[in-house]
Length: 60
Image (cartoon, rainbow, N blue to C red):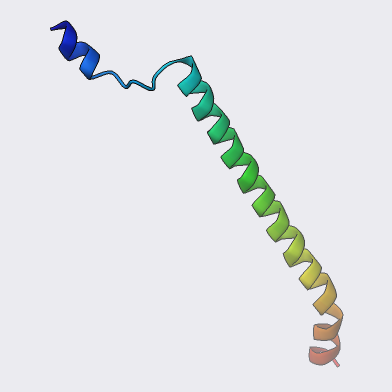
């Protein structure tokens, strides 16, 4: 019975595995935040650059 219970455990469990999972989750959130920020800044710059052209073309 003892061998059966040990076989069902994940060999990569423990404090190190938990820290690794936490670090990877945090890295993913930081990467997502950077991507969203970069996309927003890029869209704002495009809008800011093209707004006068669109205004001059459409609203004469």
